[in-house]
Image (cartoon, rainbow, N blue to C red):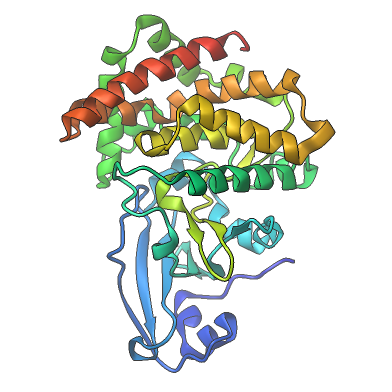
Length: 362
């Protein structure tokens, strides 16, 4: 089903419109800055209380090319997080996954997204170190497998030119060049991005550094290698801040922030999940990959083939260091916890081995 965005943020937050789109009676609206987290990209959030605090709570995400450096880094001219709603893609998510988006609106050269407040359902303390439970971990992996199988080899969502994030932008959004280009952006993540890459080159072996520098200069070999294998739709950013579980009426995985959504191989989401959840994983990285592989094999049936599974997974793990190497390097030096600093240094060793394994498929 195709959806049309509303004309303005003011229209969207009017009590009568909120009543209509949320299907709940709203007679008053109060807005305030959202204090439940921060944006890594420069988008802003508004907390919406209704009925003098007695009604449903909503979150509005406001983004634009002028404010959001990830929007610029991924050449997002259409508002990708709105596009997944207007195109009806969110309506087609498998039953294992829910999303909080209610409606969207045009907003001063950008866009505003009205969502139900699912803060309590997301993985708590996304920057923390407490482990994810095994049961939740398995549910996340199965939900991602369900997403990938639902859009398996579907031309309508994996063709270029539809406005989704292409592999080139996926792998260059967090590049050293982006850090330099966005040097004036006030978001602290951008300064960590720049410093993180400076540290990264000193913390990994020369062969790994040389290969990543080559791929940043020309990501086509990696993108072309991944394109040889079956394609699907990937969320692109299933990190702790963007994933959780709605427990009632039955447990379902919730996914937010679809700014990296686009065509690729399924290993891309698992590689990002591995890296971003890192120290919080309840089992080894290899076990996590094996669990996800089992779910994909079960859901795909005869369409699953080890001949494409292994190379796309190894290439995805290689590409993940292009997306996250800066963060691991920054934490290896600056995290206030000595154990976490040491863990990140070991992480860089593990991911470096994945780069060497993946390089044989380029």
